[in-house]
Image (spheres, helix red, strand yellow):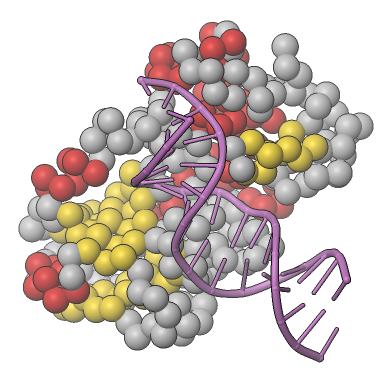
Length: 279
DNA sequence: CCCCAGTCCTGCGGGC
DNA sequence: TGCCCGCAGGACTGGG
């Protein structure tokens, strides 16, 4: 499930199309229910064909392809979406294709097994709306501990649940939330309003360390094998997970307590009872 | 406002 | 061997 490190890896993998020109945009024949592509593909095509790719960006867990027209193509992989310059894993579930010229890569694919993701073409006005400060918080790699405390410090929610709130901080998902709190030595069920400045500092430091380390390893490809970079290659950070999906295995930090799995807001949380006390 | 539960979707693994 | 159910968790919505 692409979170910030996986989406950032996708973004970097797309850099070869910068400067390229878009020759075509189409839905690809997919037997199942189509993913959300807006606007309708004929309008989409009319607006992007002939445009030059100016830059590739990222906002939280979304990839942004900025065009010289001012419009932006926003790719949102959600659970199982892949943005590729290489051939997709299967012909099944290929959802969308951009043809390019004048660039090292001639095609961009959007592939999505479960089809929860989307491909949207946004005008500058729509972009400002979708990514307004009320809808999406500061990027997890840029947020300061003061901002983090300011945005979540009065919430009564559990810190693990709050870290998943993209309006507070953008880019953290279920996997990295557990890893971040383990490194910060903070209990995942700790109420935000009971955390002190020093703990917010540790959380912010851990966010940077975990996410940057995961980016350096090109993200996590879990046992379901879904996540791939733009060249359809696996990430390597799954071999560095300390607690995520490691229930019952000894905590790598204290080497004594087994990793515990609990459910918070209907999602799995993994932590070490010894290293992450409620105090 | 704040927060939780339900929704979408497919593939896989456990239970019987 | 085959079927069914539950689970995985992105973002969003409805309601208490």
